[in-house]
Length: 219
Image (tube, rainbow, N blue to C red; front, top):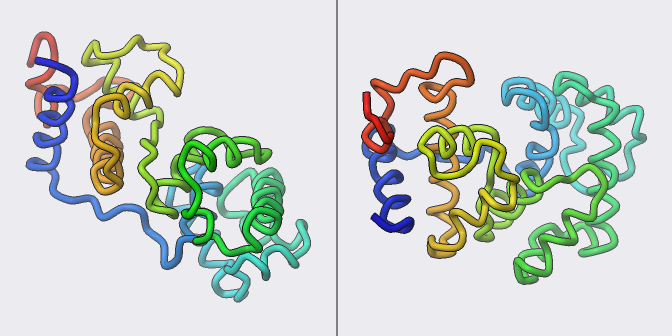
């Protein structure tokens, strides 16, 4: 089976077993982008608490966050962990938005992916996973998001080396799948759900996993 058919079949099996994921939570594209930065090294429940603080303070907008002191911002996002570090990263992102598009996040979508992605990666504190999350979930641009779950699922199915770098894993999908935002969105979400529930870091539960049939030696 070629890679395209394999990936589409795996996608179909996950979707049939789990149903649509309806990702990414957020009331506005800017909120989604903020969430993508805050979710680094923490769980989503903590991010929700931090975003709720920003909403209650009525500062969940680019210009308002930009005018907020870094110390005040850090205190508001404290529940997300590493709050001082993430406050700095948000400030760098806001500086980028000011210079690149006058705080109009939606205007970034007028740029092509190959131009915009390197610009995001040049923002201090924004790595590939965060950049691709902003591109895909906030800007609806077809950039496949890779995380630890993605690498773990693929390596356990002998599709990539266990130590494959981010860009290699991303290309594993993007080289063959159509550049479809909805497909990339749902595919990533399904892989996360499989990783959390079955393809655990320790003691994976392969038997009931929706992708069990695609193991070299199915359980």
